Structures are given as C-alpha cells and as structure tokens.
Image (tube, rainbow, N blue to C red):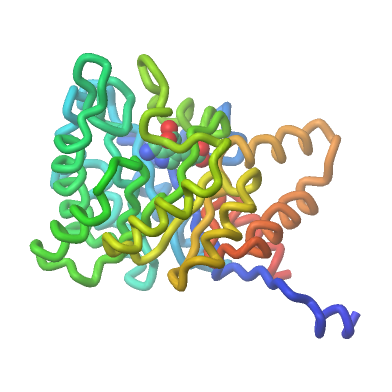
Length: 311
Ligand code: PBG
C-alpha cells in the first residue's frame, strides 16, 4: 500500500476537472435522455449544481447554451447579446461564486441556423466573417466575467484575432484556451443532440481535423502558440492519447483534454447494462488522460469523480 503510494506516477485530483454544463432559457431543469446524468439547466438550477461541484473541489465549469430556435440566424448575432443566455449565466455564476473559473465556448453552432461553427454561404464556411463574429462573442463573454475563452470552432487565425480583440477591449487578463487539435469526431453525436446543434447539411470536416492525422496536431500547436494561446486542448481525449502526449512533449503551455459526450456515454450505457463497473472504468479513463499528459480534463464525470477522490 505505502510502496504503491510512494511510486505512483500519476495522481488525479478534483482540481484537475472542468465540468461542462448545458443551459437553456427555461425555469425548469430538464433531463437529457441521450445524456444520462446530465441536464439542461435553468439559471437557478445551474447555480445550485455549480455550488455542489465547488463543494467537492471542482474549480471550473464550461458553458454550452441550448439557444431557442427563434433566436438562430444565418450569422448568429445572438452570440454577442449582452442579455444572451450565456452572458446572463456567467454573471449569475460570478456573483454567486467569485472564485469559480468560468470557461466559455466560442463558436457559432448554438446560434447559427445552419448548425455550423461558422457562417455558411452557398455551402462554404466563411472563415474571415466568422472570426469577426467570434471576436464580438468573446468580448461580450469577457465583459460578463468569463475567465477563459475557449474557441472550439477551429477557424484559421482565430486565436490571434481573439487575443487582439480581447486586449483592445481591455481584457488582457482573460485567457484563451484553444481547441488546438479538435478532430472531426463521431464521438460528439450525443452533445449535438443535447443542444439541437447538429449541422443541417454537410459535416465539420472542412474545419475539424482528420482522425488519421497526428503531425498536423503539432502544426496546429505551433500556430496557436504563435497566436498567443494560453492553454491548448485536444478533443476527444480517450481515442487521442497519443495527441495529448505529443502536445505535452512539445509545449510548455498547459494542455487540456476534453472527454466528450460519446466517451462519457459509452461508459454510462455499458455500466447501466451491468457490463462494466462504472466507477472503475470512469477513474481508469480519467487517469489515462492525465497520464498521457493532460493538466486539466473537461469531463461530464467531474462531480462524480471528484466525490470519489475525496472519499
Ligand atoms: C461545438 C462543440 C462541440 C462540442 C463542444 N463544442 C460539438 C461539435 O464540434 O459539433 C462537443 C462536446 C461533446 O461531444 O461533449 N462548438
């Protein structure tokens, strides 16, 4: 026992976790059938949930809004509405828990009528027009009190543009966590169901990475470092441990990894059938991500895992 503890190479702690939260603009907390254990939270429900997460030592959350269909447009202007759902949620969280680290997703998919991360015109994603919109989105999130802005869209040049926009607006202290290596993955399926944000046509392969590629992640890393990223992320996590390890070896920046909805759900559903032990597989999946080199892990298991680690 003692010898094992002395020689253990990797330790997980509640402080490693970021809890992703789904929000909607309703008064009730709604169960998400395709994501057992997760809810679409009302603002009050979210504040309570985050209180519980903080109490078990989870220091951070990342917010994903399910935006009412009537607010979705071609260009996704709702993303920078001062009174938007995410903006109100950030203010509610920071006023309840000033010490909480609030991370926000920067991408247009929740607001875009086409369900893409960028603006679509004649079947093409408009990179530069999208970046302009993302800058407005990031500044409005920073204004509401976000600590870390996380662009998940993979548009070229967005990290540098966001850094410039945030600095100009006076938010030099707001960090950027870039989704540096975001693969075009089928593991995101349940998430898109939870938010009703699946692309209406086409797929995300023109801006997300090909799962066959490894060196390309290092190229993306160099670009993001150059553009001023503060944290670099790999997503999904479990099937991309080699990529996490590559980034860890090639950067001095903190590395984040996102254990995405499909990874979570495979563990949840197999254990619901009694085929695997949920707690053991959950902890093993998380320790593997940490061992590969992640400093922080975005996971829907954050609260459960933190609670177990505390026992
Ligand atoms: C899109 C976004 C996605 C996720 C986080 N941000 C989905 C996508 O790229 O379509 C996926 C997270 C998950 O599956 O848990 N901005």
